[in-house]
Image 1 (cartoon, helix red, strand yellow):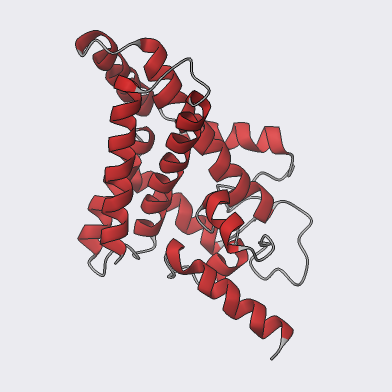
Image 2 (tube, one colour):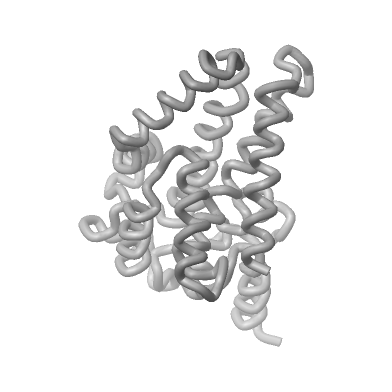
Length: 231
């Protein structure tokens, strides 16, 4: 099931991107919708890589590495090895000032987001993305306006979505005794949670059960809600 969902997200992302940069309208009322859909698919691409880091795409480690590496490369030329190292530290020391590489002690949105982007942006990544952009624009003859609108902008929007829903809102201070992983969760609403960030607004539940894939997190939320309120 995990492999099927991962492959489905990658194929839909690629198909929608291919259509958008070659045929989607750029001056239509539908244009913002195309951008938002592509951004949501980009978010799904990263969530797929995240599940691979936790070994929930497949029971086979090598398959998880292959899927995770591919998803990271497609998302923004990112290093899967670098991400998995930092993500392990994040789960071991969530919201720790010094040991969690995803945390910012100020808990202020803009400084935190700037530090987040700086930490995960590398020179090889920029060179790869620049080479691909120039190859697409000058080699394949695709319009730069389309590439910026449907390729670059959605990736940036997805980064904002992932940071806001998956890092800032769950882990910002203050932390309380009722947050064992220094993580809070959004209110239980599965439709909103899915579109917000593939259920990763249920972030406390993710830290409680990191081996649960994104498409089953709503079940952990239901179980946690029942246990918290009693029968």
